[in-house]
Length: 436
Image (cartoon, one colour):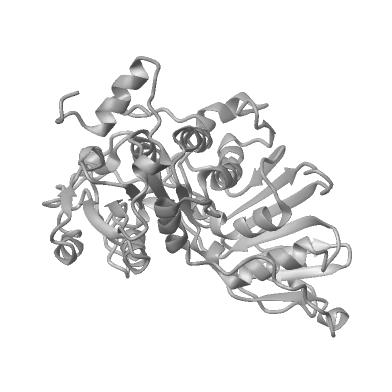
């Protein structure tokens, strides 16, 4: 085979013949003393934080990709030896990569991740894993088929606090849990799409930024207090074409805790309520009610998500602590209130003198370090795409129910809801030229 044929093109050619070669762990695993060679798609905001964490974890940034040449300049200066592309497909075609980290707007996640997996590369992808339910299933299945090391960017999963909460729930500190409330005060959306357009700034590859979403003209508009325009580089979360508002942005962090503690996977029923559905802009508030079935000897669970101005009624009761975002687990022997960094057993007087279980979940190496070490030496990751794919599917079903305007009965095996209106939100349609 000619040496100029890239790994990705070789794999695609082999797939067309019905025989995708498997790159063994030994073929793709750097030596224990080698640095993992990572290409990063995205260079600022979350991508910038990921780059810092990758370097701290011992990885080497050998390739960078960003559609904004101007904003990426400072990061490129920090890594002068790294190649730079404005198209992730060109970056993935380059030789010398072991792994890819994706930190783009949500609508590009599946495209970047699948291209990297199919090229035999390990992948770390920011949350939510994908922009649609069907994409999440395809990504998880592809990762399993390719046997790559994967991790979704739910960094709080590595914190000690989440581990202690999981231990308390799983050892029965508050008894059997059948009810969970999860909330986040953040709010996006509630905007109207502008009719105006503006010239695309120099160095911004707008068509590539829009990518698989429907074509639209560039418009920056008045900048917010953080210097962000209407879409780029942050406020794309306000628009269905690119993100999914607070639910898509934050639920993978907060719902991760009950998913882990209660061994949840696929809901059977999902019902959402919110303001009237806007065809373009995400919703400033939302309540989503999920029903999960029995899991072995664990009973069914009802989980309710709230964002924006909405919170569970239980939190308004007398003697409940003042609390920010978080989870409230309701058991038959008490309640457990948890945020990112703290938790409390309630009512507190009932747990005076309570003896906590001996810790049985080991301390994390660090979310990025765990992935880097697994890429190099083998072993599992805690937020691999099997686990985080199911979490993402559940989260995004809240959006499907809300935009469909109807409650859903969900058949996870068939990837299908009982209402026809849901189908176009479960499976997306992409702009011409973009195919998963």
